[in-house]
Amino acid sequence: MIRDFRRQAPQGDPPDAGFTLVEVLIAMVILSAGIIAVTNLFVVASGANTVGNATTTAAAIASQHMDTLKAAPYTDASLVAGTYNDVSDVSGVGRVVTTWEVVDAGVNTKFIRVRSEVQGGLAGARSRAEFTTFRSCTFQGPPANCP
Image (tube, helix red, strand yellow):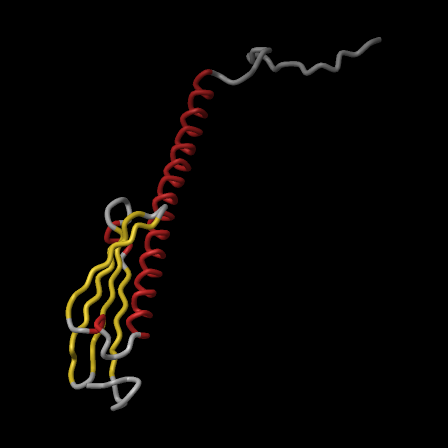
C-alpha cells in the first residue's frame, strides 16, 4: 500500500491558494509610502548639509577677520571707527560677505563686531556668523602707540 503524503486542502479552499490582486496592491501602496518618506529624508539631510557647510565657512572667514583685527596695532588704519566690507567667493559655497564695524567705546577702548554671511542660495541668513570683542590700549609708548 502506497500512501499519498501531499497536503490535502480542506473542503471549500481552492487548491491553488496565493496572493490576491488586492493584497498585492495594498503592499505596493505601503512600500511606496515608505520609499517617499525615505526620499524626503534624503532631501532634508542634503539641505541641512548645505546650510552647515555655509555656516562653517562663514564662521571661519569671520574668525579670520577678527584675528587679523586683534593682531593689528591699536593705531592701525583698519581700527579707525567705521564700517567696512569684504566679499569672498568660496568654491562650493558661494559668495561670502563680511562686514566689520569699529566703534570708539571710550578712552583707549574700541568695540569690534565682525559678521560674515553667505549670500543667496539655500543657506542665506541661516549661515550668519558674528563675533564681537573689545580692544583696549593701556601701554603709553612703543610698540602699542596708544593715543
